[in-house]
Length: 106
Image 1 (cartoon, rainbow, N blue to C red):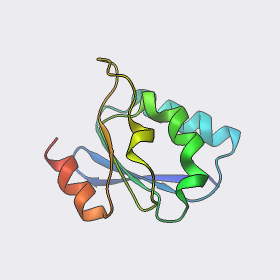
Image 2: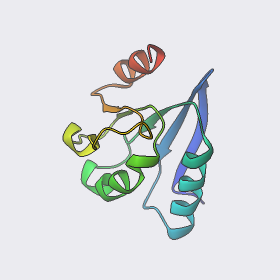
Image 3: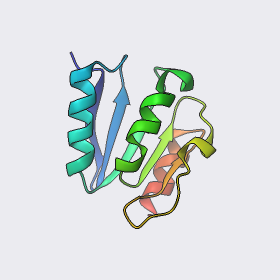
Image 4: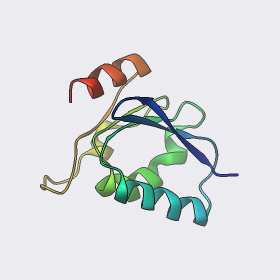
C-alpha cells in the first residue's frame, strides 16, 4: 500500500494525503506525479508530524506545483527557495479552509 494518496478535490486541485513513511517506491511514484502534474496541489499532513515530513518536503520542493500545505506544523522558511522561473509558490496554512481558499485564488 502506498504511503500517500492522491484524490481530486475540485477542478484543477488535487489532494495529496500523507498516510505513512515513504518507501523508495513511493518516493519514485510521487516524484513522477510531481514531474507530470500541472494543476494545484493541496498537501494534507494531518496524519503526521512536521518533523517526519521535513526531509521529503525539502527533496520534493523544487518539483512541487503551486501548493498549499496544512495539517502538521512546519516552518514556512523551509518552503522558501531561491526564486526561479522553474519553481511555483508553496505555502503553509493552519487549516484546510485557508489552504483551499488560497489555492482557488492562484
